[in-house]
Image (cartoon, rainbow, N blue to C red; front, side, top):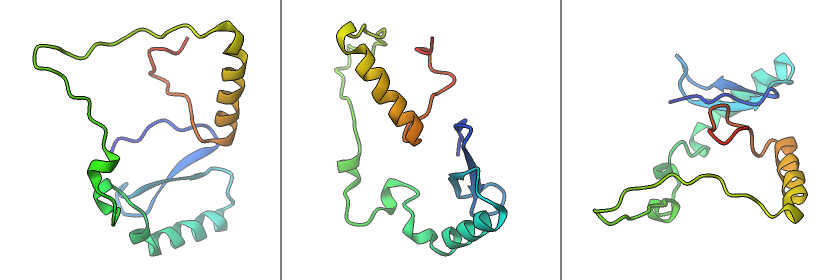
Length: 114
């Protein structure tokens, strides 16, 4: 499993040996909170869907997204488009809210990072 760089307030913990079963937890937990959380997660490993096939009752086709291309065409990378200046500040505030909530995080190797 490839582990991505996390925001500074999060860290990886592992429920198995040798880096198996990675989970993301808050970095500011004190030692006994971290130990208690990891123990609960280890005891309830079956409650966590580690891959699509682990989710009972949901067809993996429902969760998958495929873009079908004709054989003579290949995927194209498009450049980032400009946003209407009138809503630029609104978008920036919404993204900042999502970053602050920890729901999204910046990707260091994103070619659109400026």
